[in-house]
Image 1 (cartoon, rainbow, N blue to C red):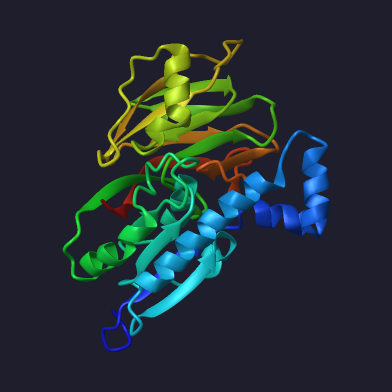
Image 2: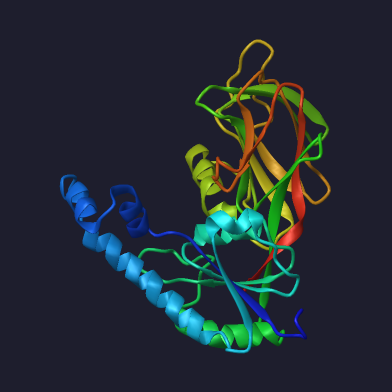
Length: 299
C-alpha cells in the first residue's frame, strides 16, 4: 500500500444498455419509441441500469472514508495505472472481470454482481451487501484467493496479449485461416476457422461449446489448473493441409506454436474483444502458452 499504508480501492464498471440507448438516441422518449417499434421496452433496460446504480452506491458506502478510491470505466483500463496493493472491485457482468484481469498483476479482485437475474455470477459471485466485509478481509489478507490460470500469446516481435478465458488465432473475417501448427513434436499446415486456446475459466464458454459440438474427449481444465486446452475449429483437409492436430492439452512450459500463412487479415485477440487485437501477418510466429500472471479472485 502506498500513501502511508492507506489502501486504495479501484471500482471498475462499464456503461449499461440504458446509457448506451440514451447516448445513441439522445433522449429517453426517442429510445423508448425505437424499442417499442421492435417489440422492446425501455423500462427493462432502465430497471437493469438502476440495479447497477444501486450496487455502485452500496459499494461506495462500503469503502472506509479514510481509504483512497478510484472509479474507472472499462474503456479506461488500458490507460489506468494500477498500484501493486490495489483492491479491485468489479461491478457488473462476468465478462468485465476478464476485461480487467489482463491489466492486473497480483492485485486482489472482488466481483460484485448487481443483477443476479441477468448475470451468471461465475466471476462476479458476491452481492453488493458483502462488499464491506470482503474489503476488510482482503485488506487484512484474511480472504481466500483463487489463483486462476491465464493464457498469453507472444509474437516473435515482442508483442504480448493476455487473456483470462481464451485466445483466438485466425482471420478477421469468415475466410479460412491458414497457418503452420506445431504441437508435441509434430508440425502440420492447416486451413480452419481458427484456433481457440482456452484456460479453465474459459472452459465454461467457447471451449465448452466446441467440445460438446464435436463430442471431444479432451478434458477441459479446472480454473486454477496450470493447463490449457486448444481446438482447431473446423480444420479442412486439402492438398498440403492436414487435420491430424485438431485438439490437445498444453502444460506449463509447452507452448502451441503457430506461424501465419495469411497474407492479410491474420489476427489474435483475447476474451472475445476483437478491438483489442494483434495483427498476425504471413511469416509471423506466435507462441500461445500459460501466462506468468494469475488472476487473484477473491472467493
